[in-house]
Length: 401
Image (cartoon, rainbow, N blue to C red; front, top):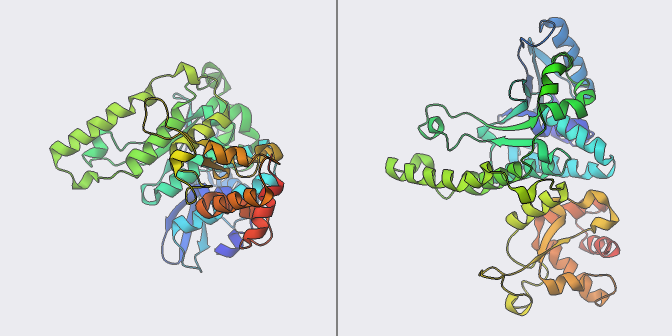
């Protein structure tokens, strides 16, 4: 059984596979379980020989010691010697995955993350053109959903993703069938771009896809580009972070709340022509504008906000701008949520190189790191001593663009 500290030393393939595929937790260990079923679309039966081959591939891919628990079932265990929670474990792995962006090319990073997410447990649906994974209800939290969203929308797959949560469905609300939330990726797109990655972990699924190319050829790519991001934000804000529990409401109130949420969700079901062809960095910007708090992380404790910016037209909301903590121009991999903060226009201009005094710029940078835990954690990936604020400030200052 591998220890948590040994997990932290794995490469991107191992880290990403663990992040997306933990299935159980108890006091002593975490379980990573990969399972898949016999398919009528396969050219061969799923048997012991194929299972043994895939077990060998999984172990080699991840540097984890998988064992066979049945036909099409592979399990490995992680010793929880630090007795940490699932969320804390995921936060640590997520941070290490983000750090790997700078030792892997963008295309390689995308391939490994998407393959590790959808390849091991992904269910192939040729008719609906999806490769689908379950997100287990017992692990769902605001932070975990945010981390999954951050990883997936920063890949080139953004426009090919789909979120299917069941919380507003009749069976879920009535608690007759509380099925897991699912994330789905366009199968045709995945097959055309990442079949070689899939072959590194599962020859059975590779065979299904390769021998059904005629069916896939009739399918199309996803066109509703904004749907996944909108639904993820809705799910995170309205379902996971809901200020009420379905179990605690009376039937009339439950019905009213669900109907209101369904009506509000309609925006996600309708195509938005203005967002067609949206670039992935714009998806991240849209997420940041929604998720980040309405405040200037640079000067919120120094000035009154009305002296630094203005209210938007026909709104009580103040205008803020998004700022890359480590300049996007200095490293393409910086276009991710953890590297974005909201600042007022005055502070944004002040952080332009050579525009304000060095001491003042460094003071604003320090405030960013103090007021944004995510940005502070992100910057820690680039310096030797994560606790040295001066070192972090100097690094960010040196990369101002």
